[in-house]
Image 1 (spheres, one colour):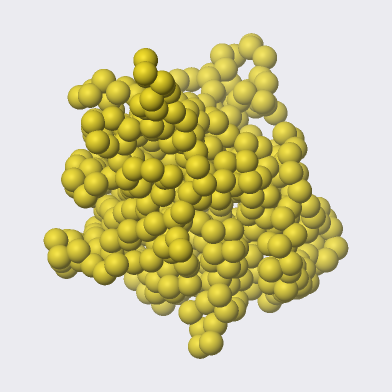
Image 2 (cartoon, rainbow, N blue to C red):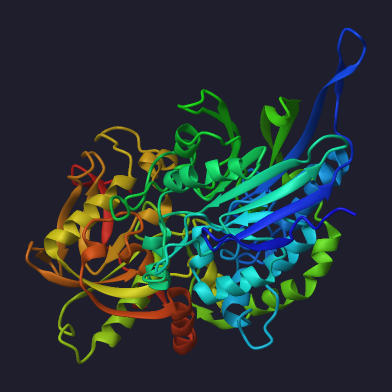
Length: 601
């Protein structure tokens, strides 16, 4: 009988972390060469590791914000139901017991499906439901998953409940208990693949999460967990895994390959460190990469110490791709050696959804569809975010208006009540629409796709100017007289839309003919030039306030108010209470793009 590959065998004395040793019977996957006497001499074994990442709560090929089947300009499909079909196909081709399935994190946040079971019918409630992502991943048969930063968005208790509901371990070698310094989650999983003859192949999966959690989810983890760097924790664990008999070491890292960080020096560890781990830490054979939402079929990094190549692969987000690592091993000097590794990605739009998964979670899907289609109010006219990255649009003004009003009401009667309240907002989705007529929860949720909460921070006029200059780096430089192409105007230097902030409450121009750092002109408040010593309250989301995007001053600014209600729900509540969205109440053009003072649009 094959052993259960997810059976835990207790806790190590050194770390207090769970050690999973597993065994699975494998169909023959060997080839033999013949020596001169015709005797079999070379023993080989091949196996496959399948990987997903950044699933973000996607089970179905469905967009809850549009209430329709998912589609994009590349006609990608999404969801674990599609991934399940691909996994079953590979298992048929390779042999079920010659495959492993792992994930690199960001699993339980991102869709209204995952939100519903975190906030509306939470899995942490008395006799609460099993999380749809746990049910789907259990049914598909995952062996291990690394934790992503978004796993912490709903707090540690919900994450622990999700962990309890999973039939596979959630790994994070660099998530440490703040008091003891020991791993707060299992650092690794180790499984056996049984070969026809000779010693079983021991495969270790080391899980690494993102140090940015200490910044982005400070409210949930401060004083409870610490998050050291990926490289240092890999350097600690990989030799130990080898000494425990691992023939193959795979890292599942919720960390991109670029070597960059979005939080500056707030955390002394690199955010996107997967390639650095491959280069600096000997003994790793392959890395499943996550976090960056990029597609990397195969990327090879030479380890500086050994000269051996480490193969990296990152499948595209939301279940759009499945990474496939193929390992070829040879028996030499009494042990298995990795002879070669290759990687590719499969596109989930080439297959149908697995009906076993869609049937399994059909009821949950129906509940969420009904929830998001609840009508919360009406809108006088349609509003779209299509031009929001380049223009001051009413749909972003709506976010800023509600945020500023909420903070202004919260500060009434305090020492800060007389200070002007400004507000920042970013375009999270260029496809968001508030329709004319009835407005539903999904309409508002599609406008504000993240579970950010609202804070109020004190800033000066000088700090506000720095903040706006930093935000304006988002635009490409276009000299006066040159043609302005909206398709290439934004996202300069790879800056994502969510890291361009428009600020309401002041007026200003952004001169895109100038170099970044000297673009803000005509900065005024109520018709008066903003002075360096002026004081403002900035309504700001917790991601930005905690240092997300590395905007200047804001993370160290004095917090004068905060709450735990998601901004999305604050907007929904405002729409319900108001009954009608009328842009005449809040829409105004307070910022614009110019060149030498001449408006671009």
